[in-house]
Amino acid sequence: MGFIAAFMALVLGEGAVHARRSAKAMRIRALPDRQVMADSYIPALAAEGGRILWVGCREYTLDDYAALEARGGEVWTTDIDAGAARWGRPGRHRTGDVCQADRLFSDLTFDAVVCNGVLGYGVDTPEQKARALAALASVLRPGGRLLLGWNTDKIVDPVAAGLTAADFAPAPLGDRPTRVGFDAVTHVYDSLIRL
Image 1 (cartoon, rainbow, N blue to C red):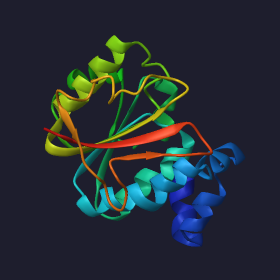
Image 2 (image 1 turned 180 degrees about the vertical axis):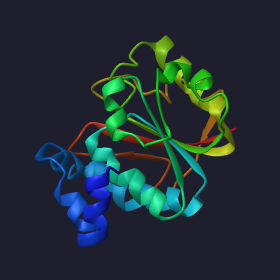
Image 3 (image 1 turned 90 degrees about the vertical axis):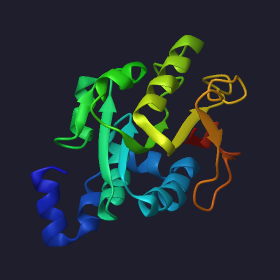
């Protein structure tokens, strides 16, 4: 959180920070998949606590990691786009390719990883997806959570394609089953644990 946002939150309350979000960020946060993220997955991950890696940073993700940290989580962020660092966690952001997360975070182990909207948006080939998932498995502790968000109109189902089978098993998260799909959008969430 920047100085101005932190000051506004302190003086005017947390709602003032949300009021400063762009109209685009607010539209994205209002989508059904983002509502499930905010209403179900964030509280469930926060309850589990620990160190959480958020892959892919944008303005509309700021509230999510702020909510995780408000409940005691330690959020780290990464994005391949150096310009996205402004949406990452100050002091806990690393710019790099998720396919090399094992090198980028070789000094850390995570209790959970949120990789939402990355596969199919730059990590496109089967080889890239397999490498990204293997790299994330390398930085995730055994029994740790992977919340994988992807779009049916962008990629082939990574679970059905066997890309998660070597390192992950499906497991419900919070009040949601292992897979959540939506009628109104092409987004799918898969909740997995590291073997």
